[in-house]
Length: 387
Image (tube, rainbow, N blue to C red; front, side, top):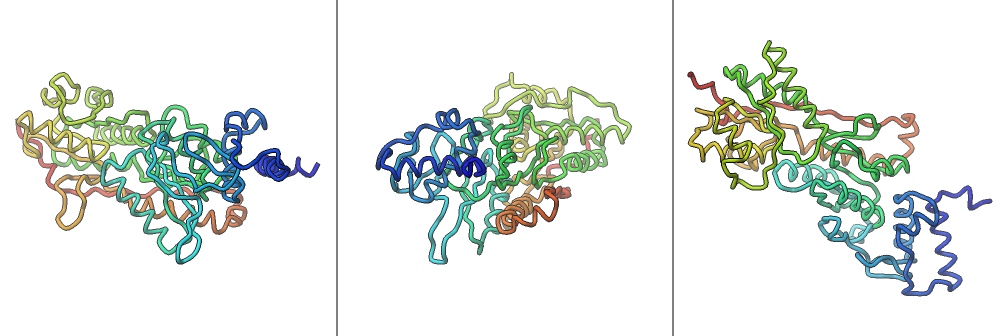
C-alpha cells in the first residue's frame, strides 16, 4: 500500500532499482523504451522521463543517444541531433565553485539579434547562480519541441524556459509539464486559456505604435507582413493591434495589405513571389514587418525594384535588425526589451526552483509579465512621397 501513495515516477524508479539490486537486470542490460514504459505503467511521457532522469542522475542507468537507456554508469548524455540541439553536458555540472544544475532553453532559432539578446538576458541572470544554460533549437517544429522537452527532462534539467512553437493546438508536452508541476516559464508568447508563468511584450500595443508613427508621416496605405510558418498568438495580436489602430484613425481595413500567406527562405525571390509582386505594384507606401529579418528582406527586394528607402517606401520592423553596438542601426523599429524578457524569465524560474514554497503562499498563482514596447525612430521611415 505504501508504494501506491508514492508519486508514479518514484514507483518506476523503485521498480528498476529492485530489478537491478536483485540481479534480474545486469550491467549493460537495456532498459525498456520510453514507449514501452508508458504502456506498462500507464503514465505520461513526462513521468517516465523524470523517472529515467533521476535513475541516471543517481548512477543506476546511463543513456546513449539514439540507442536507449542501459544499466550501469555511463559517461553522461547529450542532446540528440534529432532534437535539433546545441550540445549540453549533464543535468548536473561540476565546477570549481561547486555543483551547478541545468536549466534548459527551447527556442525556435538563433537567426537574428532578437534571439541573441534574449539568450544574453537569460545568461546574465544565471551568472553567479547555481545554474547553467543548455539551449535547444526547435526550428519551429512541434515535434522537435516535444522531443527537446522529453530529452532535457530526461537529462535532469531542473527547469525549462520555453519560447513555444505556437500553433492552433498546443504541444502536449508543455501541458504535461503543467500537469506534473514541473518548473517552467514561457517567453515571447503565452498559451491562451492555459495558466502558466510567462514573460512577453505587449504585441498589440507595439503594432499600434507602428501604425501611429507611419500615420503621422502621412502614410495611408500601410501593409503589415508576417512570414511565420505557424499561426502564433503574437502575430495574431499584432495584426489585431494594427486593425484597431487604423479604426481609431477612421480608416477602412484593406485585407490586401495584410500579408501573411507567404514564406521567405532566402532573398533570391523571383517575380512570382507574393511579396515581390506586392512591392512591384506599389500597393503600399509603408510596410510593417513583424520580425527584423523580414524587414531586411523587404529592403533588399525594394532595392532590386529600384525603390528607395525611405523616399519611395518606408519600412518599420519589430525588433532591431542591427547588433546595436557602437553606431545606431538604420531601421525604425518596435523595441520589445528582449534582454529584459530573458532576464525576467530566468528570475522567475530561479525563484520557483529556490523557493517552491512561495508558490503555495501565492495560492498557486502564476507570474505573468507583459512589458511595454517602445518605438525607436531611425532612418527607414519618412514622410509619404507626394503623388
